[in-house]
Image 1: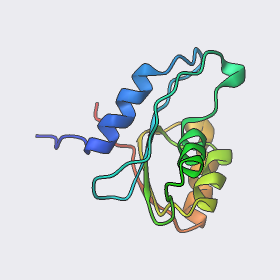
Image 2: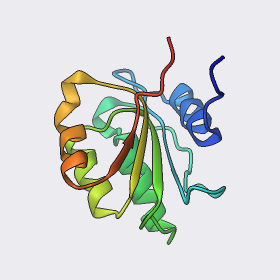
Image 3: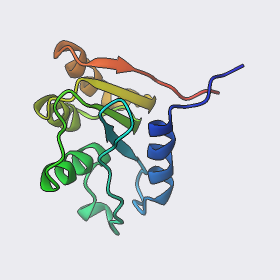
Length: 125
């Protein structure tokens, strides 16, 4: 029997479903690993104005004065290289990802090199 997904991943999947991005829908949640999470749902209408979910969560956390240092991020797709760089610079210690995107393998490699803990892919077939 499969264990249920962590509540934070379930919330990231909920945000993914609400995304209006026509190219790819991704959701992200930053958490202290206990209960609180730094996510603020917004809708962005077109691909040209859509920020990646990880970047959006980090930027909104910063704008709201919410910490990211030593926090965890739950994201529905493995991070691209640009988001991996932001995750490292934000001091996030653990990345949980639901699906693996082989086209974005450099992001996972960079996170490993930086010593970020990785958990995923968590998607169950």
